[in-house]
Image (cartoon, rainbow over all chains, first blue to last red; front, side, top):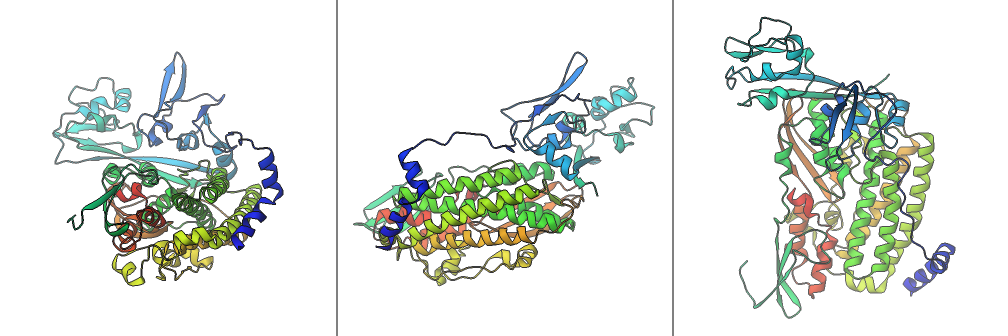
Length: 198
Length: 361
């Protein structure tokens, strides 16, 4: 009996009667703060590649060059809409939902540091890492096919048959060396730190 | 399974009431169910193996995808485990915001669990009411975090976004609506005579059996076992959390316990909002190496992460123990034996809130 009364009470509510007399489907609206696929803003990209480094989904974002202009491209089938690329971009190139507004208000940001690690027992001294590294190529375009160079400014080079890390701070975390290593000897750690302005 | 009778009825792996694939093999004698066995393995993802060798910014999103319904708690337990391993301190405001989002997630998870139960016992009106109010909770989650399911809100040293004064008002209005509506629905469930016929005294899990099967979460607490890892969590202790139990041991009391926990979560959110400390939301800090075992309370029960990390915070080894497997075993071996109808097998199975996605990971 109590149950019947409860149901009748439910049906006597104004909202119920109104929705009963005028049934209509709730319109499908996207919430204001919904974190959708990132879209480009009017700011220019300086191709620092932070967005590519932070992206947790493989191949979801790629910074491409069109003439003189660089811009990021989001692949919608791969993107998981986490919004990390929006938060890390120093030039406000991307935006989605409330992410840019909130990070601006709270003064929150991400900071990257990259660490290189060579497993000496696995390294064969082939020099693939030193040759493939784009930063090495910029510093010493004459770098030899087996990682031989006389420059001490490069990130890594082959010394005594093993790859040695000389300038870890110059690493941009692209992982080209890691992907090019035939023996899995060199690894790049992308250490991300979440910070806030005091 | 050793056959003892002629008729064994398989339910699943594709069955209208199962949200995810699993197979229940029921041995029956007439309508009475003598024993049930569960067969898993239809959707193994191997997510722990994918996590290995990756830093937190990748593992965090994988951890969220272990379970499709209670994703926030996986994020929270993984990040808090790594914080404990690295001895990071988080600001008080961030800790409170974590609790708010986690409790909102618990509300929506319990609502969908109760929806499934009502749907299984063919009370679709109440089921749709519950699913409708769940949208309000999802909207609140979306407003705070930007996403409805995979919120990715907690990060090392704090949370991603702060809440403003306007957001306070929106959350208050939202949880007032939820409380008002869920009170009515809980009343309907508790007093509905047909619901009681299908629920009271069905699927009994005695406290002894619950301990034997290591049942956790609402399934255990509805059998008078007072255990909840939230009582050991410092933020929940600050908010004066006390666990709720029920002594019914049946389907009805498991569903009512979830309603109780929804009200408890609403109370926790109110208290957290009222006493939200001012200050930063991110403390910074990097993850280091070590090994840790950390527990948290997922909507379905105790969730444990065992993590080994290297010096740059990359995952070397990870093992996740999710609550569903214990509850499902308790359900299959103790709740379902001697139920009087095959129809009660499905409703009993849903009453323990099985989540096959996190069982198989």
